[in-house]
Image (cartoon, rainbow, N blue to C red):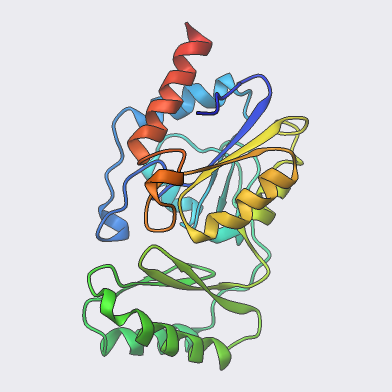
Length: 244
């Protein structure tokens, strides 16, 4: 396992499936009691070079990790916060009401799916009805094809999301790496899903490391971590070494 060097590395962490276990619904995840204290101490040990890189809105991450407010990228790069406790910014247009209404019509005739509306994207979760995957793919692609031209489909763990096509976790990582706290460090990106792939590529392009968490995308045999609890153990071990 790659050792995290707090003197030379910058750390980027996905949230669902990486720091916390995937849950049946987005709201039903469980955040371990020791996660926020560990991330707070780790951010200090890294001199601020720690960021969350997630598909969730940053405001949701703030709720789960309260009172911690780390630098972060949210909604797959559509929004960003560059300073601890700072302002969340975006230059992406809000979703049009007509598009949201079209997705809600899909929801009404597809029992079991969950629509998660965000400011700049809308996610359709089908974890409880996996057999609807192809039908949802077709219907959501049709909505995108007939909607604003800045949108595209993105796939994840039993979820299809309509997102801004010119944003990505990789672009967000590159942006954050230009900040003073991150400059001159080697990026490490830890993630588990399709949306993390662009961040893996960007971290490696910048001379850094991609670490994969086993799940529906990465088989356990080729992953760096078997599950989120192993990621948390890795973080705790880093703290023990640098504080010991």
